Length: 171
Image (cartoon, rainbow, N blue to C red; front, side, top):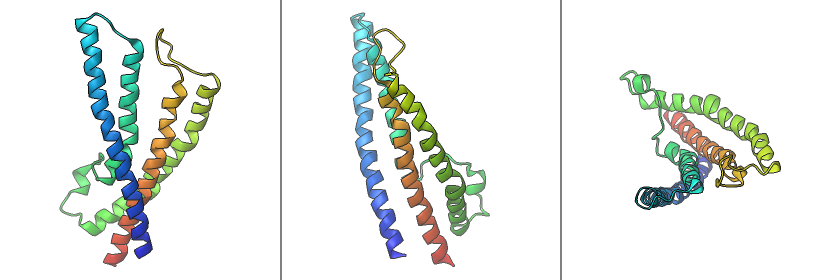
């Protein structure tokens, strides 16, 4: 039990660190959008590359922040059943454990495995933006997909393990 708890602590600390780093991207995105809007509306000087960089950063925030969101139990779920008076902490731990085991972890593995050909093709063809003046090397942003799901998979294993510990301690 103690080994499992240490394992989850290591993953949780790593996820917390990644989440804090990713949170700085929010500030950078706000500054970038402010600059873009100022340049576009006050100086009539827009940039396709700058606009694409904005959605790339937003994608990174969303993708890389998903494990952090799971760690803090702030993900979306159907609270109609989960928060009902018929569910106690023991039953919630079972729902979390089984949901992680049968849905979260297999889905993460599916996305990780199926995204490699997608990134590989982008890399081989040196895919860039189809817009004139857009960003090159689209494979870099596409690589954030499996990376984010690896982080989510790790945090999912930690989440599942914590719920397993809670189940075993209750029994």
